[in-house]
Image 1: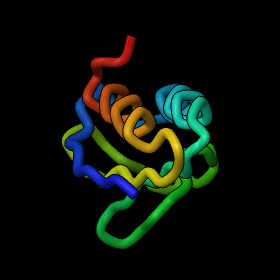
Image 2: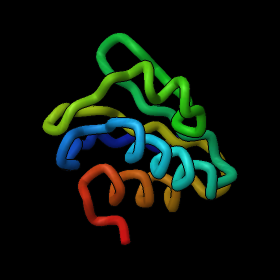
Image 3: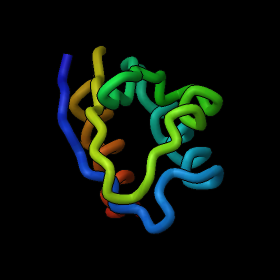
Image 4: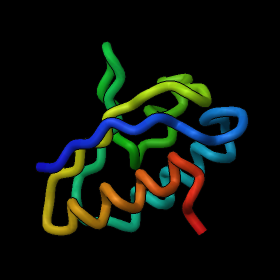
Length: 86
């Protein structure tokens, strides 16, 4: 299992469209991918779960990945959240 805290750097935070893209990015990996806040842990491959977090730009989340491609999954999710995904 790998974990990393990341500060969200997306204009407008994680609203409907960016959440849909994030779910697509997370779904590319075999590993389980969760995002954690202080009081919630949500499956990043679940659009409804992600919508329930209500995250904004500048907030910090912890990415937790577990599985055969966990390092790649962590890197891909981090790049998306900090605005570096292509």
